[in-house]
Image (cartoon, rainbow, N blue to C red; front, side):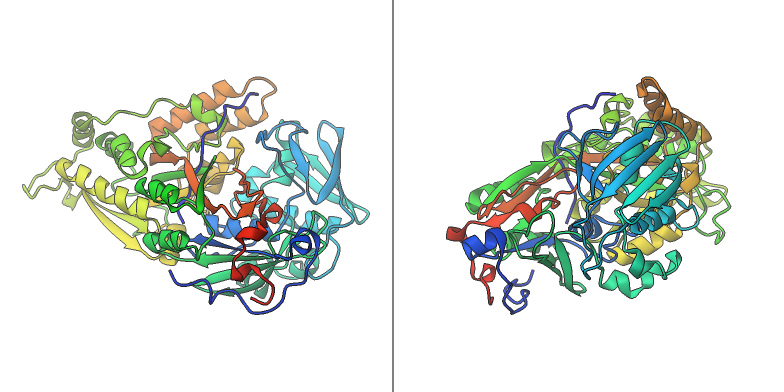
Length: 562
């Protein structure tokens, strides 16, 4: 199986002075920082609170940003992002792995790995986490993806043996990537359904290069380096994720030098010129799994059981009409410039299968009008809004306030649909309210943004019958058994999976479960005062522990006692 070269990346995230953020106190010296006498700090500006920065619970890029500093995987992807086979992975918690047969993998944990409370990372941690994640009753969106894991067993304290139901190419990926282990001695007594409300989520205990210090909701999350960590003592000793919902304020924080790094400094594209002109910042392009789409609700939100089809969107002709009515390319370019493509299907720039998807349908208002007429929608009272059986063609679109690109595109959608007699009500709501309504199915249209994992097998999380109606999963309740069958064939075939992926994506296009809008390339901005400031597509801040501050460029907040 070959992988197309992935383009750059995106995600939209980050006022206030950061000098007041950093807690007083001396950080102990050691490793690279000791040699420099510059323990270092980094202020990463993001746009929303990391509410659940714990594996199995992460819902947003902000959650992932923090969780990936606190929790390690058994192994991480090598730079080529190859998700199939037993090579192409770099050890983290597992120092090695071996194949016993076509359906059995054994992992030996690194004896040096410790939880932040000092307890060793043991096999039972992996067993508990994977058992919960693959259980449909407790695993949420992960269960469908991990359904081919038949058993997870401990052999002694540091060996984990995973048996699969069948042979397939992404066995190793399924074990090591989707769900990093949790500490069984801390979460084992907490019922899986109660974990999100537990004290553990408010003060997570991980095993990564950084440990939790504090969170001030709406302001910051602070982490500190773990001295003597088995991957190496981080060169940057304090990490602050500064929460700044306003996009202009995020950029100004960066330009003023009070922030050190930010993801998605564009759109608007003009921000890139400001970054380049600043002198103390550099632009870093990174491949991204971000996908932006407007999701159709297949269930009637007025039906509390969500068992009744949506009275408007349950008709595929209406869904196809809304797709055909919109000039998606014009909208996306007006916001992203050349840094995003319009996908036809749920495929971000990380997925090699995006090249197999049908070409995006060109805008065709005449075709859209005909589809609506065929579905029985006409303006019988001359008020400019189509109606059928006394019901106006009026739809609510929920948009998260922290995402300026989605707000801008939503308003353009509203204007483009109005001449067709479609009344689109744009509801811009605070991020928490947006997620609550989304997971409850309380919407007609939902302007979603997904950060996809590198493997296209993750398509089952949001677009399979198995996850229909699950929070953080297929909340639009799209279900096509034919698509599920094709995806299964693509995942488990012994031959070339491309024909199955191609047909699955074509079928999704015909079903029109969403208006797929953008698969953008992201530009990060990072202060030039950092050395080894590399960013990874699968986890942009995942190599943060390798960064260090150039002593000649150190700021007061980098020094001990500041």
